[in-house]
Image (cartoon, rainbow, N blue to C red; front, side, top):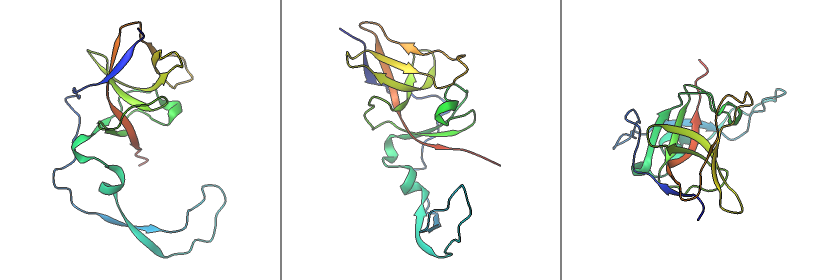
Length: 155
């Protein structure tokens, strides 16, 4: 039998849960996409409003937010101090970035499931300083949830 994974009930002590009665914050959403390369004349009109509660949280009861505490996922766009929105109701699949419970610690890694059902958690940092986790026969990987969004602070 090859390694398998199960959904874990554990969460870090410092995980943050959505407020049980979230307020609505409707932010103007422009219809036109703004290029990050060459400037474009933007049409200055509001097409709709965006509520971040609705956009970021699909299942409030199963959602937690944690702060990334390391640099092992820099090449995936996740850095130290980023806020990670984790949905515990999403079934993890190959290629997802997941939060896993390794028994005495939690980690954020990319989930890989080979064609022969070998299960791995891989770091994404070209420095090579961060370990991947390969699970042996009969090992059980406990996945807390799937990372659905990353919130970065620039200032």
